[in-house]
Image 1 (cartoon, rainbow, N blue to C red):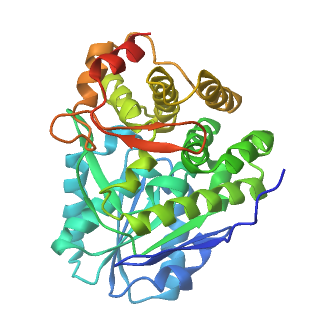
Image 2 (cartoon, rainbow, N blue to C red; image 1 turned 180 degrees about the vertical axis):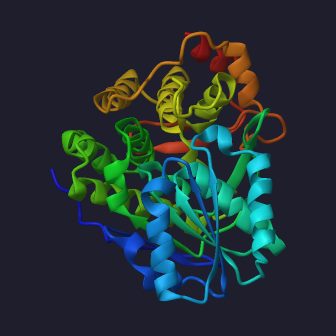
Length: 370
């Protein structure tokens, strides 16, 4: 089956509009990169997996286009465990050492962890400097680099310390997906599937039809999936930049997923804990099961989602050894909750997600325990 062809340039409207550019070879385009730098100070923030592949090339491209730039670099360890207040402090210290002024720019070269950390540092340095997102993972391209959410984790929960800070630009070089480990590709595809689940049944069907091409990293299929996902997110973010209503739909599966990540310990290179995309995959199935239990959807809807996730080799069950009561306790700290009541994104079937306030905790606990 075919989808209407998506643009490779997606505009995000709002008080601080910006453009998402999706194409191969963008990290070598120094003129494009440098066009987003208003001053002379640049901090390039990356991680230990991405930097060896791409940091030198980005640095060279920037300096060839703008020899006057003063460019500092910070490389953090790869993995969610690095999204900490300590590393936030390291980024702030790097900006201070650089002498960064208010027209400085932070470049986030990496996946979601790097993007969140760099964006938060940019939001806080001198009460806000520019941030250009250079996502190198599929998950970051379709989700975390778009929308201006920035944050770090604390022991009590994920993304509890952060700010809204829209990027100056998102530049998604699809060539970087060639070096993406297969597990990380699948994690990104979980977030892609989410867009079909919340508002696009045709996209959901297309993902099933194109699953082999996507898992084989077919460039055309991935570019289409990225663009379609970004179009959905851009449309929602433009209407609800601060997540006062509709934007919460983008969190289907995330309340459950974040609880699993926090309780299990964040996934990182070298451990078997679920990474973010895998936890969201499990969370979406739990949300679908809860929706069916509450009479909002059918068991057939749940099975269609579970089957698609399974086709992409994504987990659909809570990892062994996690206490339902402990997971519920983590969910009580979710940012979407209001007045101590669970507020979850559920659905009425494929493409029909909605925010449900005051969900009965007993029903949630039953799903977590079953």
